[in-house]
Image (cartoon, rainbow, N blue to C red; front, top):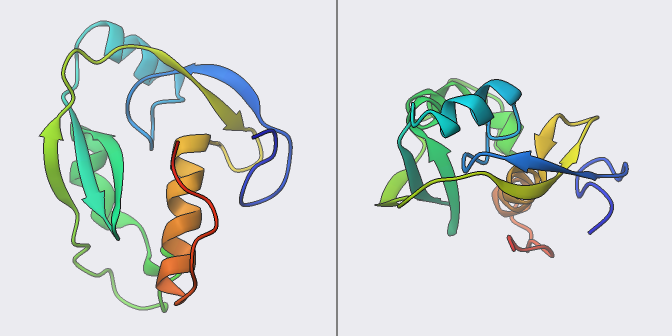
Length: 126
């Protein structure tokens, strides 16, 4: 995939830590190398995503409209940990400089927005 699934701008390859949410940030790459975080494979809206311990704890701060839900008070997202990530390390992913997220997160958000709008998501996580 060469284009962002949300804004259609060009993506480029970068090194990433396991967290779909913050894994693109240089600070997170350093913290991953230092073993500063635990990483979890989580499930939400019939999809898996990987989050670090910080992003897992902070996930509830996303406003519902960000995920394609009706605007309103912060809901209790049904996010659950499936398993720990064993031996986390740096990998490669694509990154959108416009959306400021890695492709794994963008695909998850795209799916969530379609699902929460009652549509079928045409793209899946790799």
